[in-house]
Image (tube, rainbow over all chains, first blue to last red; front, side):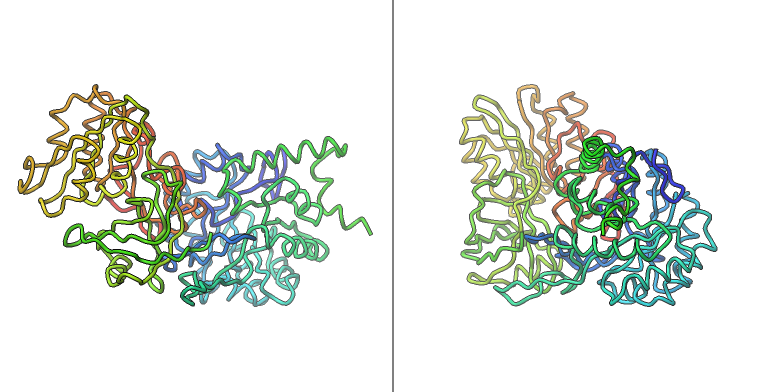
Length: 301
Length: 259
C-alpha cells in the first residue's frame, strides 16, 4: 500500500485531469479496466461550459495539442458523475476544479463536497482559457490565496497543478505550499500552436492551445526536479508519461506519484502496464520499496 | 495526424438537404461504419461516416454542415481519420440485413457493397420521411433486395422501418446492421431484443465528439464508459444492453440531455 497525502493507493499511478474524466462511468473504467490507482476528474467550474470549437485535440508527431476550453457541466451537473466514480471505481477520486478568482474556487469546492471527493486538484494552469487556469496560476499571490481559501472550506487534501509557462515554476510551487497545499502537480501543458499550411488557418478552434505527450516529458522532468529541491510537500509528476521507464524517470527526478494523460489514447490499461514495469524494475535493481526511487537523482552528484 | 487537405472533386445532390462530397483522398483501409472528423476551416470540426472511400454524405443540420454546403467543386476542407470501429463484415454465404434511416444510409451503403463483394446475401430496409429523402436506393439495390418505408407513404410501405422489420423472419439473418436516428434505432433494438437476436445486431451511435481519438472522454457512454469515437461508433447490441442508448446523451458541456 502506498500513501500519498493521506490517500491510500496500491501503486503510484494516477489518471491525469481532463482525460476520460467527464463521466463517472469512464472514470470507473480507467480504474477497473485500466488499472489506475487514483483518478482525477475533468476540471469543473461554476457554470456549464461548452468549451472551444473543434478541432480541440490534434495528434502531432511529438505529442498532442489541445484547446478544450474547460468544457464541463458545472459542479451541480457533475455531482452525479462524481458520486458514480466514488461508488464504483474502488480508488481515490480527486476532483479537479477551476475558477477565475478565490470566490469561484471556493464555490466549486464546496459545491462538490457532497460527492465526497478524496482530494481536490486546483487547476491554476490551463494555458488556453482566458481568465482561468494559467491566467491565475502565473501569479504567486493569487495561487497562495486560492489554495488557502480552498483549504479553509474543505477537509480533504488539496493538490495544486502548476503551469510550466512561467519564468520560475518553483516560485509558484512555493506560493502553493505557503497557502497550505498538500502537494503540487507538475506540469500542465506548454503553450503551443499548429497551422494548416494548405489554408493558413490555425488548426485548433481556439487558434492556440497546450502541448502534451512525449515532447513535454523533459520539460516536466526538469520542473519536477526543481520543485522537489525547493518544496517540502510532495510533487506529483505529469507530462508525457507513456511507459514505465518514463514513470521511473519522473520519480527519480522527485515525483512522489505519476499521472498519465494522453497515453490512454492507445491503451486504457497503460496504468497496469506501468505498475508491472515498475515492479519488475524494483526487483531487478533490488530496491526494497518504490519510495526509494523518489528524488534518487538528487543524490547522484 | 494533422487534418489532411481534401479537395472537392464533385458534389452530388442526394436530396434537398443531403449532398455527397467526393474528394481527392482515398481511404483504402476504411472499414464501413468508420468516421472522419470533417473540419470546416474557421467554423468547427464534426464527425461524419464515410459513404465511400472517397466521399462523405452530409445532411445540412448546423453551422459546420451549412459551411460545407457553401463549398464548390475545387474548394477544400480538412479531414482526419478514418477513426473508430466499423461494422463487422460478413463472410461468404452469410445473409445480412441492413436497416438504414435517412442519412444513416451513408455509412451503410459501403457496407452493403462490401458484403455483396464477398458473396453475402444482402437485404436492406431503407427508410425516410418521404420518397425524395431516400438516400442511395440504387447502391443498396445493386447489393441485393431492398424494402422501402416512408413516413408519408410516398414510396414503399407507409410507416417506419420497424413496420417492415416486423414482417421479416429475423432468424434467417446472420448479421443485422443499423444506422439512423437514435429513436429509430432504439425501436429496432427493442424489436430485435424481443425476437432474441440482439447478439447478431450492430448499431452505429452518434454522440458529441471533441477529440475524436479517444482522449477527452466527451463521447463516453453509460454505464460501460465505452468511447463512441474509439470502441465505437459501431457497437454490438449486447454492448448497448443496460446503457444510456435511447435514453440520454451528453451535450458539449457534458450535461445529460434526454433523447
